Length: 165
Image (tube, rainbow, N blue to C red; front, side, top):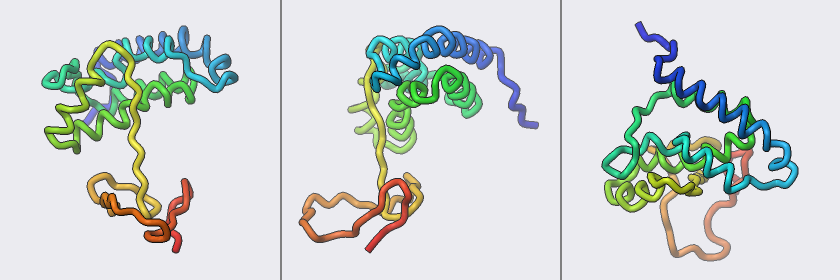
């Protein structure tokens, strides 16, 4: 039977992130929110915990920590306790890292993952836009076309999804 009870390692990770959320995030969240910035010092501290990059395979310079949905949920919950907005900033690089690991070519992995495996914070994010209201990275409809010309193609709506004519 599948158990969703945290392992000892997951409990240690959860407790570490909870302490970070309590001491670092909650203390600075209001100031960062009101200034509409995320401090580099804060991002560096979060990076040192490996919250976004510890699961990069050793072959690309990472720690090679096992990827676990349960661990990821525990980390996200604890960060959101600290501040949902700052949690998004902390985890944004993983939106690029994980698709590179799972879906990238070997050349893409070799070219990009080592930059995120280092000890210095590295900003990164993945943006995907499709002409439909959902996004499926393995069944995307958009293809690269460097011959874009004004007046051609389909107009798209923003976050509401769906294609327009």
